[in-house]
Length: 274
Image 1: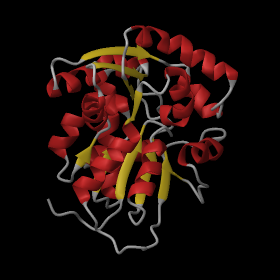
Image 2: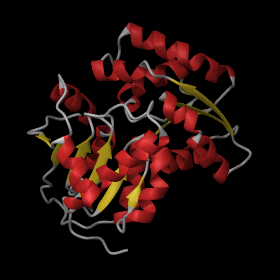
Image 3: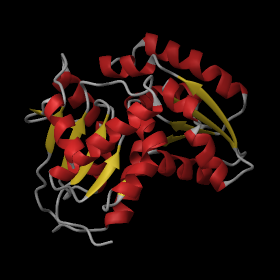
Image 4: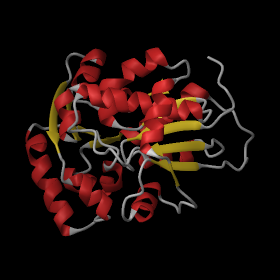
């Protein structure tokens, strides 16, 4: 599929998807990115399947209206329920975060025992279980919802004793199952990757779905830009919450020059008309 020259479009329910953007910056430094965070309607996890699909469609249509060349669904919840609909409705390449992470875990595991941590919504969806079963039915999957890790990541408590205690509490059941691979099934969790690795030990391979998604994107779109070209990035949100820029820069790993806010009602009206 021949791509248009527009930027890579990335959307998430909030700011966690910026960990995917960070990996795109590292692996595809010449590629411009348009990020949309639906911060007015987060979190998606507790919402119904129908609502998440509707929001994902609106987000995708908004990105299309801005001339993106492809779409990355940098949200585990949206990827788990809405990706099949977007793939059918959008004529551009659409990439989620579930399949890349599952594929990397299937390649990494030696004992066929894989752990998954994520939000309650992602774990309840069974998306990683299905994806891994589709690759290798002999892989056993052990999942654990870790909702408290989201606010800890947003707070920037990367090496706080409380964070280590929470991680140990959550991962103890998975380690008891002798997993040798752990999927970070939430885009917030790469911020805590070092702490998680310290808790699980070097014997457990951690799969960062954000990085794996960026790697898949690179394989899908190839090299489209002049080496060394200066990429211009743009950040859009549906609301600007307190401390947004501080939290976003923590996830992105670099300063954000400016943030555009799009009116939620206008977003819904415009996207429903398309």
